[in-house]
Image 1 (cartoon, rainbow, N blue to C red):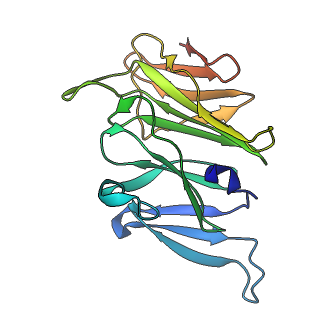
Image 2 (image 1 turned 30 degrees about the vertical axis):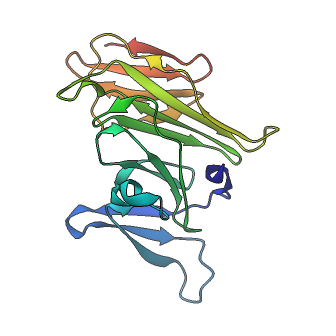
Length: 202
């Protein structure tokens, strides 16, 4: 449960510099004499630790952020690895493999003082050469529970004719994740409590 050790969540600002291949991080809480400090996080992020040849070959790109945590998604297609990072404390924690194989899914993250929820949605690999927006996987972790827990919930079914764009990401508010769908245009809503998706169309 190393992912439950990422707290405390500290505020920071992250600025993507794609042409430079890195993130610029500003720590406004730094106590150094010169005030806030800057640091650089190289991209794509290499896999943490020595998890064997396959693990070492993985690279990760930014996918979501919440409450002082960054979520990085493995670039290779298949059963994705979600890597959580606290850029201020420099702690990294990979989540267990995503149960559904995907190509370029949309990722959402919501975090609190002792818990977080991560969602990986869409781009299901229905064959080595085809994808469909069918389902979403949700990881729920709570360090305050006894014992501390972290698990992938049963997959949820996306609404019909969903078309997600991973570049748009997700927003979280009042127990729900929101993301955009195009062709036709709509807002997709995941109710975390019930693990059920709905669609809001204009």
